[in-house]
Length: 359
Ligand code: TXA
Ligand code: MG
Image (cartoon, rainbow, N blue to C red; front, side):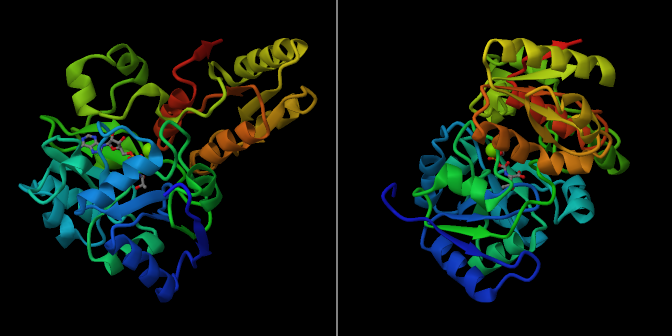
């Protein structure tokens, strides 16, 4: 597989060309991999019901078999193809949030290969809302298992170019539907727990879920999870959710404090490191640009600090862009935790490996 060429084809993100979809669907049915856009991040898809196809996902990503995959469907009726004993609350959530960035953990059906679930008795299911993803799943006529289309431990891809950087030569086809709208992965909600619990915050906010399901529990704080990492129960419940999961290849730090103290401390750290000859990157808000302009740091501004949707959309691109210009360290500011802010904080914690500087 490594010797093969990867073809990238442009596809209309709102009205995908049927011939491109048919080609990609035929590849999937033949047991091959296809990278496709979703509204969250690009996915690395395979026929979820063919073990040998699913095996290819793990090989292409370099991902351990202990990390289960999400099965993507295009119609609520297809839930029965992957899950059993579907609780009424799942139907209610599906009605409200599908298609969209919500993944439900449900009891696994008998036809789902063990590779997809990593041997768990549960399965993760989501119906994406991106027209290309929906058209592809429909044309393939099978549920599509798809993790984010990055190499294991790297930042998730929000453009086809990101996916190509990570998977060139490892997949036959990438459908390029432009940049992803949401920019962070789906929210994972465990409906098999005693109380519905968020395992990974994402594109659907805790607040939005609570309007429908007031009992839903927020995710376990990442720092706590870090300490609990070797706890067997924790790792069973949230496989693949270890802190370093999304790390860029350069050491990164997350600054926490008021807007002013955060910027002052980041500027001081830029100066200290530059004096040692280091190339420093900063991930900041638009309103911080002026303060950093003459600092000599490579700047990537994500948007206005309160515009969490825009911050989420640009976050992974920002981490990759700084990595690509060759900085030796990335300093990130933090943002409010409301709405999409919870997912942003989670990804920043993962990107920095939990290295927080409180000022
Ligand atoms: O937005 C998304 O969710 C993207 C797009 C492509 O749909 N997909 C994605 O997949 O982020 P991935 O594999 O990178 O992350 C899915 C996570 C895994 O790390 C795993 O921890 C969790 O989902 N997961 C899968 N099955 C599970 C299960 N049965 N129980 C608990 N967690 C599960
Ligand atoms: Mg991933």
